[in-house]
Image 1 (cartoon, one colour):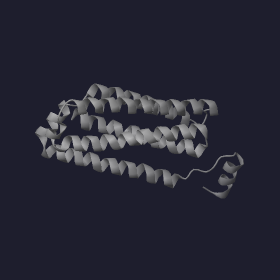
Image 2: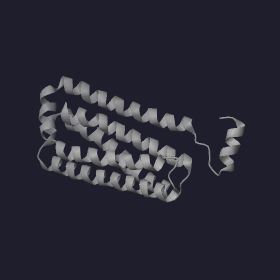
Image 3: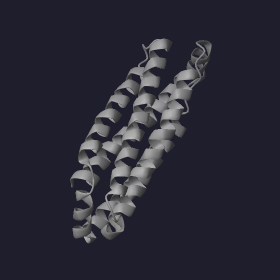
Image 4: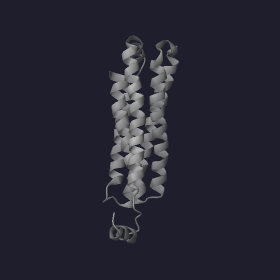
Length: 185
């Protein structure tokens, strides 16, 4: 960005976004989840029977509902990120994205409760260890991201909106990749 563009942005009251930080965060998230999902796939190949049995204990219907909830939340984040969105519309969309993120958390916790109540999950070997590690790590990202969405809704700047909505879409993307690998493969 040249000095003239920076001056124009500052004159409009907008802070320039730190795109380098954004892309470092995006790629670090993708790398971390990529490594975890690769470990899940490799271990699943090595422990085929235990992973097949473990998948039978999961609730793909709740996971499917959560997929729709998270995609709807991502849609709200996209509404908030539009350049033409007015501050009130942006605030409403960010709050809706956060609320839907918290619905995702609630459904996931209910799913965990059902899985833990179903019996001795230790008999499935590494399946549930990796399952809880990967989905729990994602769940923490959703919960924390929801809080940040609310914070940004309260204190909007173009850079903050861009940062959180981009990261929120990465969280969506990770779930879209995780869902078939964990629940359907």
